[in-house]
Image (cartoon, rainbow, N blue to C red; front, side, top):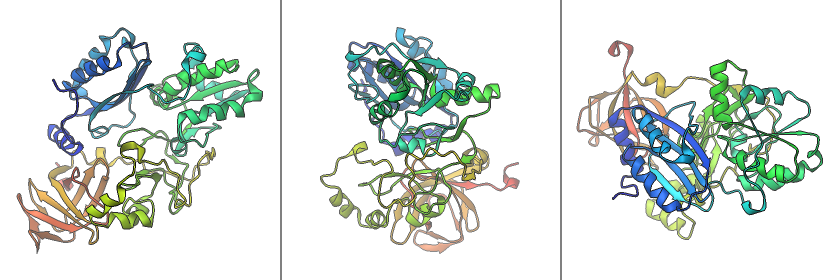
Length: 456
């Protein structure tokens, strides 16, 4: 009986591409008393693995917190697996604003002490005594009340790229840090102010609203379903968005655009930008904001030190990482002296620029053909190696290189080397190399962008 992943992210990405089916990214949570989290976890893995459901899910005695990718044609079957548990009957599924078939590439279900690390002792207050849930229009109306204080209960790297007008945005690394800071900051407003709170999907506010009511705040309100549900409602009902910018999400996409306003800067050059990057140095993986120009020059790295390390032989890089914590404990969330234009905690919503709203994946989805896959990247010479598995590629062709970390990059081929020598056209079975200013990875795919005449 399979209870854990057997495929790598690269292998899973390839299977998803070959299947050619639409997938839905969604999230949900539920607080409930679960007697045996391990048994619950195993039941979910068996049921969801059979549906090709992927994602990152935490279960605990207090409930479940899930962010997932589901095949669109299995959506109802997936919902049925939830309905089998009384506490998840009729649960709201927050479907993502923007879809990406590679948002998750593994099914990871972990048993944790809590489904959100809040640092609270739940036995000291009534966790069920929550704030009033508000829908989008109700939330907007209360924002207009001068007697309202609105608080963003997300982290600094989330609020920096987008938040509600006038929100307090704590400069914190995690949720548990924000609770005592906000409690101390608002001590004088417990009796007479409306405390209005929000987060990504609502789960952090479920606990925070109960905590602040226990602390003596009289008028506590929370955005039902968080920013994700708010966005769905404003689009369906034609409501003006009071959220400005981009909503950070915890999957490969790293963000969903809510409005075209860019309110943050590239941390390296100061240019208006709200695209996050994970530093390519495997001993760093700093999460920071990086524009396309800096991404090309710095090769997805946060500093020249990290860039130099990525150019070392792999064995030397591994040796440098010896003794470091592994997994997500390596990651640092946007705090480094190398980032000259970091603006943590700045609650300004003055737009710096307007985003170009083109979606490369959607734009090219019917105008491209899969050629092959990446095999290697030579960092010192900036040469990428691919294996052509289908069709032909010629000098002058436009290609799309796509992958979970690389994103989507358009390139015009100016020179090809086939099996070691220059060539005008590469055919099926050829091993090709060409110069690229950015690093490619084994999960990356190479597509030929078809001209209009070939797409009729």
